[in-house]
Image (cartoon, rainbow, N blue to C red; front, side, top):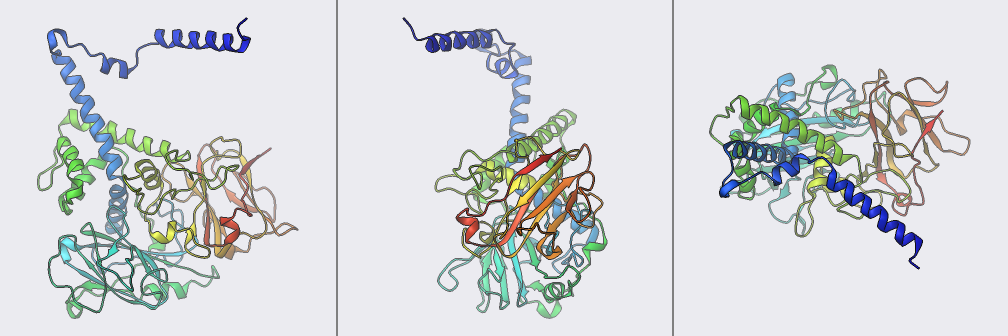
Length: 498
């Protein structure tokens, strides 16, 4: 007599197969079953397939270019507001609040961000002051690496304390990708893979009311073309905290206009030829005007909006292509660097992890991804509560941080807008709580942080949320200590409160 469970399984499988067979055809069925009578398609079929090809190419081009779009949005937004030039280095002298629109900024450090153009200005010298911590990325947001070994190793991206100068300061020389001239001695020499270079300085403080010291360090930076120090433009350090600025990348058809500007000004990297061929099919070709007609423009707009949504959907879940997509098996905290800061494996690039990261963030360096005690930082992130439901600004949650938070330097918890990934504009001075705020502790030394549209009560640590607006949370641990790595310390998930 057949096993009852086996019989039931066969019946269920049959029902599911029958249901699938009678389901309404999807658009994929229509594409796959497009008729070719007598071996040729109809004119309508040709037009439909060509539109589909353009749409698919546009979606994949957007995803490929997302790190550059993210960076170009930052560059153009900054230059519109603060001015353009190698000598312009905006500093958020009073910290970066939610009025600055940029993906996942850290409100608990001092930021400076500048943008260099090696095509226009040639090799650039960056005089890094002592005590700095920073990153140099190309415009695809890849760490810029040393031209050759420095002290027996290659350095990539990190500058200052985590870099080859070890916090003592020094002169960095950044070469264009196609530079063939002499390379003078006396510099930490790097070669960018793009003409565009992102200068990103971070400064730490111990007291939120005493920010002068990190600002003073950053303002000692000097940037000028190689061999032209005497005639260089004087440095400008506008206070970016005083002026709201939109540095977000476009998520509609304007993205392809921006991408055209990027391609037109950038070095044609031989490794990019296949993707540049995809862009050429869309009408984006270096040195030529980009003028899509109404039909193409409409398809590109739909493709950009689709690709942007794909990027978001990728970012919400643990990356299945790697084994460490979450930090803990029994928690919801995602690992945003499941491979390394360059999103590379031995034989391929991690496309989905990279897309998820640059949808919601900018800038990467080895120091951000390295797994070493007391070195760099860790960034557990979550979009969902303990039950796996997306975080809602209308609901109340509690995040429990057990005693002994494993951060040698400091920790912070920040809320971010689920669409723009900028700081949650919640009406509070900053959308974060950190070590320096001296948050209230429980009797056992643990810390609870409350999220919700209304206060949980006097004396409690509260990040205000906005009704009917989703958000996500990043827990930053600067100088992660051993309990983080051996998982003897674990943060709680965001627990829904009644």
